[in-house]
Length: 408
Image 1 (cartoon, helix red, strand yellow):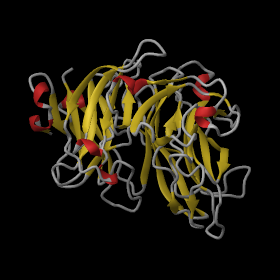
Image 2: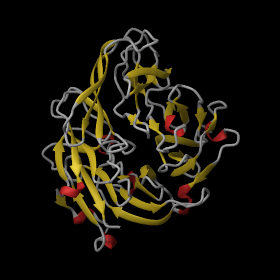
Image 3: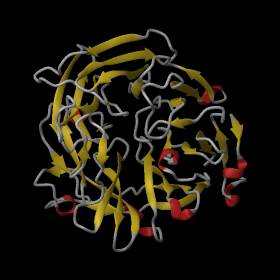
Image 4: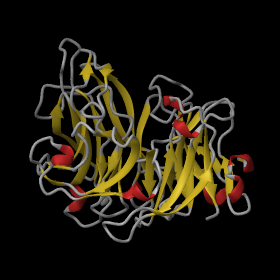
């Protein structure tokens, strides 16, 4: 850990503290900011070494998930050492880290769901998928680097490729694993689910605990062996909600009108039924943050969904240029990054509105990361569940590293 006052905006140096959590001996990164990688007491989180903001190489022997203990001087302790670890999620009670071992190959191989207590003890295998997905003749390969766990801790979902290497335009699918009585089911499949960003609702009521927010990319192209050739965001992307049994397909009123396009990142506002997406608009040319609620599916019309409610959160900020973001678990604060037209980017903290139709307020610039803003160095800020601490990535030192900001 290294104290980095040079990454704090000059006007905030009396109040804030930035810490570099990892050292530059090997590239390290936070896990993607929508991942459920924090203990509920805000004391421990998972990050990874020999990795980047969008995942890791499953064949990299140097890759490890690490527990960062904020109450122990931000100490870093490896919690995995297996080859192919991916898709981490901490259980809602903070007791376990769930993760997958990717030993898949196109048309075969093995995907293993494991869990380990956060102190590194009691490691066990929950389920091994080394056969066709039940009810199908398809095997899963190329698992998505993000998993998501239900708010009751009973189910975990991950997506992947369903091709066998011989067909073009084949499906991707969303799998849901039952944890208490281990099993797996395919709840969604199709050629447009290549970049699905699955996110279980954080709501704790039993019905909402089955909802998963997902991203669709209309028009993407993929090779027969599952390599993504064209990822269509903008007009091609829209965001949906589905129950984890595959029913009750819904849509969010964002994008797909020729002017507004979804960038491809969204998150829940704490434990509410409201979500936020980041957009690119042509007129005005901005990157906005728009909140909304899912409503019954009526075609892939995005912003044109009849009866859709939405709110431009970023309207009070002149020329918004926001890309990645996250909220605290109570839905009171939002942290976001400003993009490349702000030099090395910037990290901003806002108060979320208490009313549905309110804008972001109390804008505060809390870090100058100095990132090169290349794809593999994205800043990707997020908050601890209690909203008291922020986290981001940067390659300002010459190698990608993980950082923390606190003091508000």
